[in-house]
Image 1 (tube, one colour):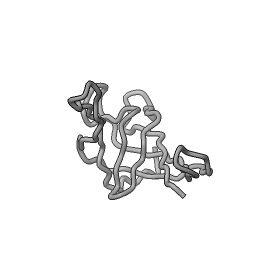
Image 2 (image 1 turned 30 degrees about the vertical axis):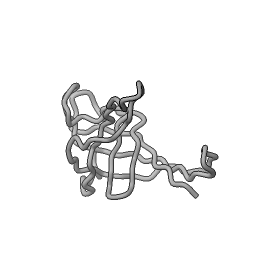
Image 3 (image 1 turned 90 degrees about the horizontal axis):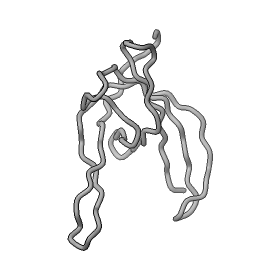
Image 4 (image 1 turned 90 degrees about the vertical axis):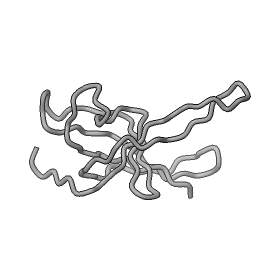
Length: 112
């Protein structure tokens, strides 16, 4: 895959659920590691959210491949963080079976 420049340092985060003491659970995010990535913008749109309008932008994030089950391999439901920016991972696919890269299809939502 030519043209890939892993020049963006992103933190991979996973959701952690902990009991809240009242029979429910609280969700928080835990850093799982840092990955170098190539971030490419996709389509964007404005949508309605629970608290008002949201700007939703899609991204194609390429990272080095890792074996299935490895903690460094992103999976849907996790997210990448770049400072205050958060990219929620929707899907992950290999560029080629046994290849060197993974493509993470992700989105970022910003309240308007």
